Length: 146
Image 1: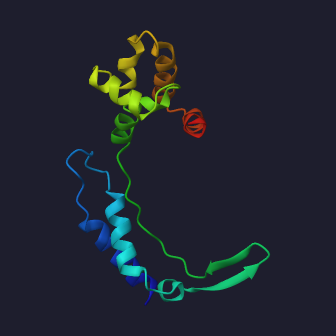
Image 2: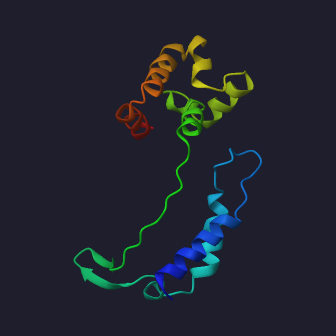
C-alpha cells in the first residue's frame, strides 16, 4: 500500500464525516474519524501504511518514517477562530465545563458578556484584551495553565 493511497483514503474518510448540527460548520466529529480509521487500519502493519523502518534503543521500539508528503492543510478563516475563542469561558480561572454551562444558561455566552459579572468581570477583561490583541503567547500560557 503506498502513502499516496493512504492519504486519499484518509481524505475520503474525513470528507464523509458530517458535522453535528450543534457544532460550528468547521468542526469535525473526531470520534467518528477515529472509529473509521481503526476499522480500516487496525489489522494493518505499520510497514504497509508508511515507508519506514522499526528501530530500537534503550527507550524501546520506535519507527522512522522515510517518506514525506506535502499536504494541503485546510485553513479555518481567522474570524471563525476568533469568534469561537471568545466563547471559551473556561479560559477564566474558576470556570470549568459545569460552571460554563450554568453561565451559558444565565446568558453569559461570550467572554465579553462576563465583563459585567461580579465575580469573573476583572478576569474576563484581561482575557478579552488578550484575545483582542491576538497575543498568542499569553493565550498559549492560559491554555497551558488549564
